[in-house]
Image 1 (cartoon, rainbow, N blue to C red):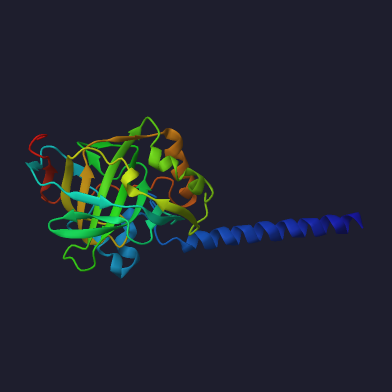
Image 2: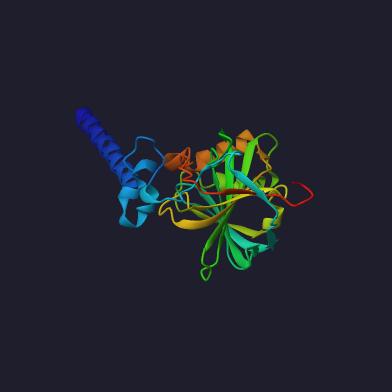
Length: 270
């Protein structure tokens, strides 16, 4: 009797771990791409995973890049941002944590065109570098105008370890509740993008692409020159939330291919 009970318990344990292993494999297989340097779904392979992702390997205007001062041309051409309070949700997209606005959250005005704000997300470490320096985190504010020639505008903000970022602090409770929960969505309530400390009026501008598949080109990039601060705990939280999928979710630098890089600086700050 004791031996039968032992065998029954052993059988249940085997079934449990087998099911857990199969489930883990299924989750692994569900990943469309990842950031592993030697992974079959890593950045070097993105362009080969799907035909519509070919630009990831074959594109001539890919992002991110290094903002080398040797290449920068200084011009005066301010951009205008008009953001407003709007309902938002926080989503664990597997490869990053995304804050998505639903409704009119305002827009950025560039080259005579309005680009409505859609969402924000974070990469750690930073994807863009400045004179070869990589920072601890980078936030992307994504704007979209389907009727424009260049449909997407992304504003990037760089962060180094230091004082906690107040805006990110407001989202920590939602983010901490979705650790390892891919596709989990939490209501964040009314979020004001004007509370995001973006920095000075100086910024880099260049033409690039999305930094995740399908690596769509024709993206207007704005990288703020002023580097903000974020706490080590905040960076750790963002990494832990998606660590099964992308503990480090920064795409490697891409060739500049003679693209011009501009430093926008108003006359009184140039």
